[in-house]
Image (cartoon, rainbow, N blue to C red; front, side):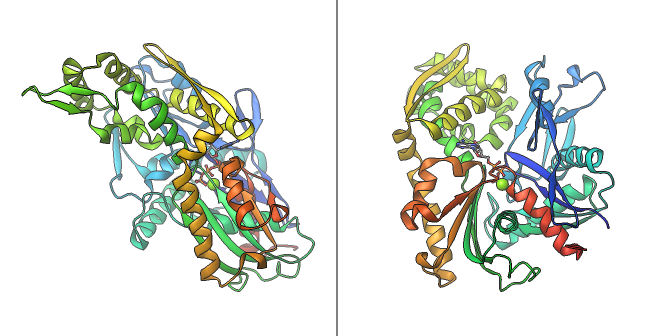
Amino acid sequence: MRRAVGLDFGTTNSAIAVATADGNAHLATFQAEGQLTTTFRSILYFFHPKDEDADGRQVVAGPEAIPAYREAEPRGRFIQSMKSFLGSRLFEQTQLFNRVYRLEDLIAVIVRELRTAALDQFGDLGSAIVVGRPVQFAGAQGEDDADFALERLQAGIRQGGFEQVTFEFEPVAAAAYYETQLDHDELVLIADFGGGTSDFSLLHLGPSMREEAESANRILGTAGVPIGGNDFDSRFIRHLVAPELGANSEYRSFSGKLLPMPQDLYAELERWDKLSFLKTRQTLSMLQSIRAQSLEPKKIDGLLHVIDEDLGYQLYKSVESTKLALSDRDANTFRFDEPPVAILRDVTRAAFEIWIELYLRQIGDCIDGLLAQCQVAPSDVDSIFMTGGTSFVPAVKQVFEQKFSPDRLRSGGELTSVATGLALCALKRSGHWGT
Ligand SMILES: Nc1ncnc2c1ncn2[C@@H]1O[C@H](COP(=O)(O)OP(=O)(O)OP(=O)(O)O)[C@@H](O)[C@H]1O
Ligand SMILES: [Mg+2]
């Protein structure tokens, strides 16, 4: 039979898996910082034309992007979170060093790398693939934008080497993964918390349901919010970093009036997808003129440094290590040391939980809405399967502990359940399960 292939193109991490007829799915592995991993960071680094790598490549993806970016002189462009652009009509293409790239071109670079790794490890993959999609795309304003996002995602994946693309909701894929562990039937709420979105699905799962391929009566409903770990990260920038880079400072206008700093600039600083696009001649020259009139010029120097040196990756690392530590401990120190900018601040989990309160409420409301739409009471749900990297956040777990009871919460496959489940969905669609 042909291979059943599933691809999770994630906001933060991507993964690819191949299922065999016996119902087992295998994840492709990648080399990252001397270790084998089953996830591939969804990042790109574009070399500066004066600094192309030895093979003459213009762009590298995933784990290779980090050392290329770190060692670069002069600095090229580091791109993170490109999935967040899919639903937004404002991002169609970007010019990077005299070349124009459509979003599809950027996605194709990642897909090609995943495909090559899977080809090397599993042999011929065929041309068909099942790809995950969030229920709600980040940045999408309605059904039209979701269709627009899907068209572009499909085009990027085709360009990356898979001709026949079909989609599955990411939480439905995670359900296929969870179902392999079940020896009895359950009504399950799947909750997948990623970097860009949180996605939910309510389904009947279990041995007697497994035969019902693609059956609509298995899936009671799906729902999602365009909120994820990136939104949590944005709060670290807002509360710890932006004030040190002049967010609350003022400058003198030509008429002598005191003006606040342009807040849209700091809003972009908070978003991993937007940060590296702040570096335009226009923004840099605007900041230079503001700096000359600023009441706190050192802070504006810091902002100019972060933008001009494209320090998005260093900022991301600082935020991520603090956030991850706060999943395990009550307090941690936030460190960002890139002279002339030096930020050292203690952060408690309690403070972080206040920062993300609004997001937690939106997540809770989304689940309530899904249960109501399906006419299911919380007590009817047998188990809740929580997956995705952001499900490690204790406050996210608490939302579920409060609505359901802690003994019904399950977790696992945080970074790979969706890719594994997608390969299983591909196998089911191919009609070869158990053949
Ligand atoms: N231990 C942890 N504590 C808190 N957050 C974590 C932890 N581990 C990972 N994360 C966060 O999880 C997110 C990545 O999760 P995941 O790989 O599931 O997302 P994704 O699939 O790339 O995104 P999406 O599904 O939204 O497209 C990041 O925001 C990351 O910072
Ligand atoms: Mg995901």
